Length: 194
Image (cartoon, rainbow, N blue to C red; front, side):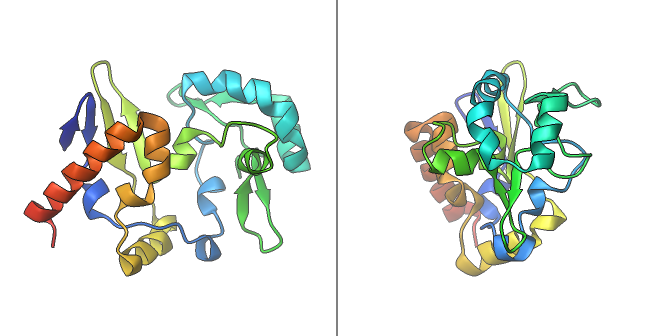
């Protein structure tokens, strides 16, 4: 682990390569799993406030689920905030295009200018998962077999995880943090990279 300010960063974020390959996986990360996407506490109010503007972008099943469960819920196992799901399948905010590829209804609304919030930061940052502790935050690379095509494409294009996630890392922690992270990554690569 490497420390930058109050963040402990897994070296896998420098060493592993990753580029989403939606044509292969069809956005399985929005469908697979036991619970919805993790949410930060400050995102709950945002979801409440944008729902009516995002609603036209969602599936009928997603809308029904949100109207029944709410714009967010909690994971019964650990009490963490998460997005609601459609009958324990896909995230309630998911839409499907004509090729069966999942898209985020919130992000589509954002792209159209209907809302000014792109999507939950946990979705934007994937495959980095952040675990917050009382005195620090741990940024870890999450390995999930459904992302094997993203790992293959990342390796082919030689794109480390932190570079693939430049935009969401800046969104979460700012330009200055990303600049320091990039410098640390370059030093790490000189010392440990192949």
